Length: 167
Image (cartoon, rainbow, N blue to C red; front, side):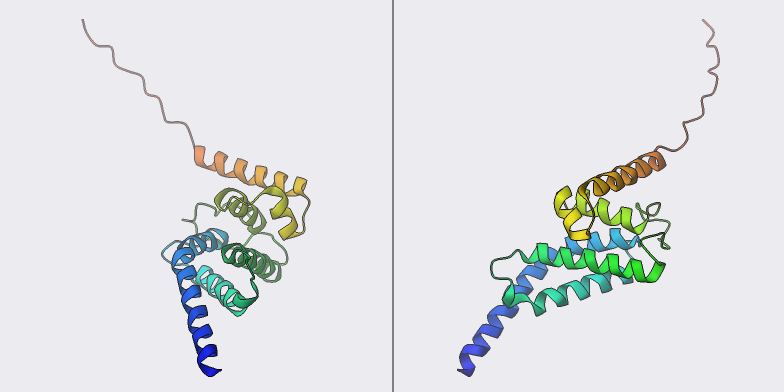
């Protein structure tokens, strides 16, 4: 009986290690985008990822064919949303790192943009996960995209008069 339990525990640990080896990099990048930290200095993103992976490991046996990546991503997103709500009195502005590509966005805009564009989550799924209407998710995603595109454009290059070339 003990050998069978030990064997099951070892198999569970191997399966989870394999999952983490394949998914942790992408999940860490998503968490770093959410927290708007610098990629090389991201303690909040690492903590968010660690908590999400711990939650997935605790429920590993209960997944029953469910995608562990999807489950971990859902927990990561909801944990981020709850943390942003408590910490900043709502999904308002946090203090992102200025080098972050998503620094100009609110936490809610970052969350929806990361889910929709980086993770490829359908509008309806993102809406259900966040408790919003699909129309609201669409509007926030559009606003966030517009903010990023306007910011990326910057000023036009300065035009100087060309000197006449003698013939």
